[in-house]
Image (cartoon, rainbow, N blue to C red; front, side, top):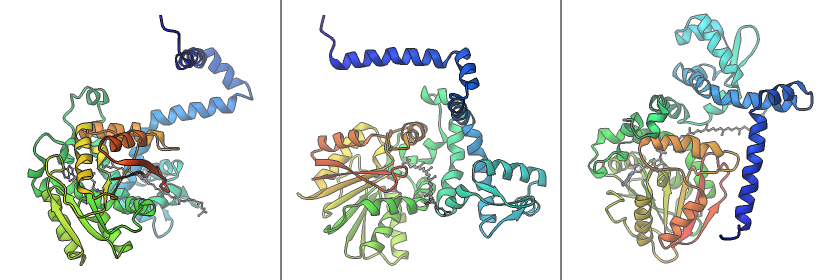
Length: 378
Ligand SMILES: CC(C)=CCC/C(C)=C/CC/C(C)=C/C=C/C(C)=C/C=C/C=C(C)/C=C/C=C(C)/C=C/C=C(C)/C=C/CC(C)(C)O
Ligand SMILES: C[S@@+](CC[C@H](N)C(=O)[O-])C[C@H]1O[C@@H](n2cnc3c(N)ncnc32)[C@H](O)[C@@H]1O
């Protein structure tokens, strides 16, 4: 038999420690003692609260959802209102409005402010600064219906609403998707580009670049933000035909028709246009399984000249301080959508290397909760 390696030994120790720890934590007697003893009581309370928050997470989300649906944050935007005024404007009874506002206050969405009056809370106020977030929250209705039976979802038995919403995730030929199949997801993506484009542009290595190709550029919201900040950069967009047509119309309405060249096709099959010295993939790779990612990265590599660069910007697995966002939120979101997975920066660097890129590296973004960025050289 082979001698155990240091790695085997360390995992054996870890298993022993986990068995011991979990045995203790699962003991009702230990739980009672820890809650009674003054030095461990704060830890016991914090752990109870943390577990309760997981149990109640869906309830909290639905309180937020009700506030968004009833436009509570818009109504409070100009200052505090009485429960009676909010009830009148939302069409709820006073009792129901008070219940909602009081619940929202415990989540920092609203804040009690004098006698039976409420103001925006800290999270409610922050939400107003993120255009597109209410739309994003509203579309979670689809996701929550898909999650109603999470085990069926995991078994792949469910026919999902997110699968229909993201029409390109279906089995058919994406390039043949008609305009009505791409309209709602393209609008949602454009509406949420505000917080995405700010993050990407703060970290993007665009200095000294001549031409940027945004692959899967949607209806052009990201490139419009780039155009405003980098007046000297030429711009190209590639997306499915029905989406590219929306981009064409938006660029021409914004007076950018001469500045951006729009190309269309299916990046799983068609070559990407050449001429750019940097390619962006913003919220693209996590939508796809390994085979498509490999095909796409190889196509990007072929489209770039020597010295060219690729930047991948999307929410990633294991984001510092936000681990559940990757594996839990996007892991299950993409499961419901029907394809793709969140990946760690390390896995993305490996895929970039396999596609022939050099020096793949993580670039620090201001807020890894929103997205992270990996770049590499052609
Ligand atoms: C003013 C005083 C008194 C003190 C100041 C103290 C201080 C410095 C406070 C900081 C305040 C501050 C700057 C707050 C900022 C808050 C922000 C920026 C909050 C942002 C929240 C953003 C959220 C919640 C974003 C959520 C995004 C979601 C859910 C995105 C989902 C995306 C999906 C589903 C994408 C789908 C695409 C696909 C299919 C995966 O490809
Ligand atoms: C999640 S959206 C991201 C859009 C945009 N980059 C953003 O961040 O707002 C993914 C985009 O990739 C496009 N897409 C998906 N599959 C594609 C394919 N096979 N060929 C070309 N584009 C595709 C979609 O039409 C959509 O615009």
